[in-house]
Amino acid sequence: MIYLQKRICLSCRKFRLEDPQSGVCRVDKSVDHYPMKRTEDGCDKWEDAGQQYYIRTGWIKKTLGKEEKRKGIKTL
Ligand code: SF4
Image 1: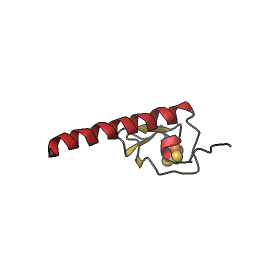
Image 2: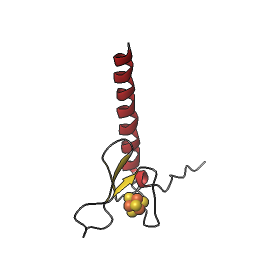
Image 3: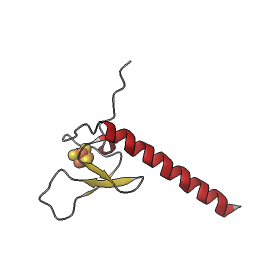
């Protein structure tokens, strides 16, 4: 079975992840501040980030896991 990667910003080459939910789109190098994008946004300029996509999803999972743990400890 072939797994098709979702054509969202998170899996795009031009995306730089900044926090678990969002990052910036570096498609237009001429702008001063790259536009903020949510990880699930997308557009027709999408380009496959390849392995980078899995690194990003791994980082998100790890970060959210840590956050959950921290909250868990706080509420005890
Ligand atoms: S807006 Fe388009 S080009 Fe920019 S990161 Fe998202 S999918 Fe990629």
